[in-house]
Image: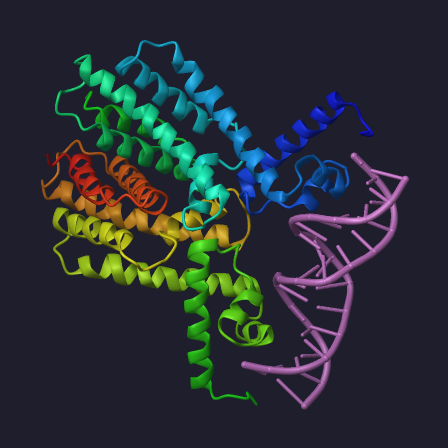
Length: 199
Length: 199
DNA sequence: CCTACCGATCGGTAGG
DNA sequence: CCTACCGATCGGTAGG
């Protein structure tokens, strides 16, 4: 018999994950510790371990939650646009807005996770790789549709565009987080138009 | 009286720093631990602490060494080129070669350090910020010279170019490290030409 | 979800 | 640069 109802446990779990996302966005997923989380949330370490079984599961849950936030802030606002250039531009718009906003105190969660696990093995490496690979696929699909729609030049290379957009966003994140330079936001918007050869 | 000569101590110190750079490039500067380093080098923890005084000093030394490697691999090969577009292109060339090479097992040291400290306070935040700010200044100077030389269009925005180049390199690092995608190297070269409007 | 506890490892010190 | 040691914290378990 659990000491709390399933509903109460779910609320607790959600609050743990929310705090874990905040901490990880600043200190990294490897910087998460169960003890600090317990302290922040005024609960015992065992209470946290009991919910997730292990630190690795907690990290996975935090990455899943960050994923969901990204989907909500970046993909969903663009999902209703017509496929092709219009949706691609909407995605870039909400993507830049997402980075300029306050979703994560430590900046782009995926960029951090990518750097953290790009040279490390383990399950989190695979999860990060898979998430980013999927996002690249989403972008590539829209570029391809835009080419088919003749909204972009026929000789556009979708992989080149996706590559350049991904880098752009990482540069924006650095300018905003490391230098606090808000001028990077209009620069990023301008770079999007240049990458798509719209100016 | 030291137990070893100053020359011996310097050799030891250099070997510690070299290993610290390797470890930090994979696990981050925060992932460095004195104990692991001592193990890797078959020496005692006290031997390491004795050389640096504290973990923070060891991290600083590792970042300084990474800085020196960057200077040697990226700046020096371009330093003899005439200022302006030619030197800028040489820098981009050696920069891309540096990232595609094996200088650091975990990929671009500065990108990792930037992500690690962009939302954290402390002395390493300042050191990373200063190093990257200086590099941006170097790039901007070459862009400005290229404009004065009429090698780039008069309406080129140096800060825009620097911003885009910096992002490009971060994207290249992700493609190479997280995805092991060597096709990103020619893509990066092409993106340089696009950013500078040379194609 | 709590208290009480485990062995391992952390950064660092004392003293030679 | 070593041995021996410090208190603090790590992830995690036992039992309620």
